[in-house]
Amino acid sequence: MRALLDVVLRALDLYTDVIIGVAVLSWLLAFNVINIHNDFVRSVWNGLNALTEPLLRPIRRWLPAMGGLDISPIVLLLAIYFLRPLIA
Image (cartoon, rainbow, N blue to C red; front, side):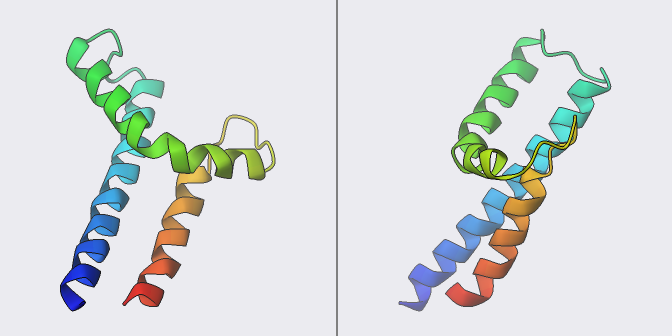
């Protein structure tokens, strides 16, 4: 049973890394440091969005509009942070 819990905790760690990666990549795209017209950047962006959007979309619908600021990744990271001790 402990091995299964370790796998779930490791998956949450990896998903946390993916969420942070999406946030950093979105900043790089917003400030035009990297270009979405590059095939590699576009494929990484689409892949990361496919992993995170199913959980971020309901959070975005629940949160009030805050202009151009998207805090849904922060809310999801906090949820994972509070979920980890419950699993452990």
